[in-house]
Image (cartoon, rainbow, N blue to C red; front, side, top):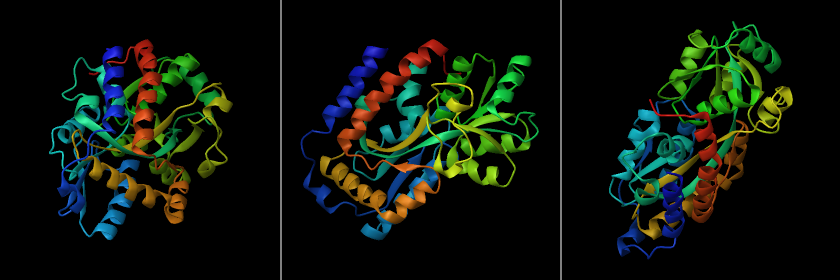
Length: 325
């Protein structure tokens, strides 16, 4: 599977240099643009779709619609875009789950990323944060590890779905710390956080932005951020690496994809306009206030990034024996 996927992602990179599309691309857009979110409402992806959508609508005069299509770890929404018309009016705000992990953990996905989708722009990167329900008797990572070792399998960690960054953070944590905690997948960050807040699960490696309000309200307790360094948004919260699991470093990301065959001019126009939006000082500050960093990549940089992510996570998934359920 690894060689096949590597070839598929190489095709992504090559496709960015394809021949120009039809002349109609020059008038784009002439109708509403739909951005599919392959998860339930409530995650950081929604924030970026709104930010980009509002700015594109203001600049181009066409509505940008956010369309949630959750299920199967992001596969349902991703497949919808992969099979959509390649005209620039149906786009995907994707992430590591359906773009990198699902093809590695499923026997067969209904789409091939390299064949059916084309990169537009890497939008943003951000760390996750290890949070626990306040009823969990652990004030720091060391105490959580002690609790997990005392009662193997008694702690459960929520995620937004199999293969999402929340899940991978937990799997890497288990392996590096040598503890047994049980994964509980949901259909999005929102539902996972709801059950964590309600005490149905004990812990979660959540995206930083949606977790911070609950941390500040005292409804969740932050034990560590997943990036190698502390996050400015939670400066008093140590990294998991410094709190007891040396070398731990996992970050999340979101990026815009289009159906393969979308005219190059349309992809280029989307990339250029969204890079402008993400580089505006107000939007940089807005992202930093949520603990995120606007990537604002070129098309080629995003394609190369996808290749690097595939190479990074394939061995982790293989060694952790992560499989679709």
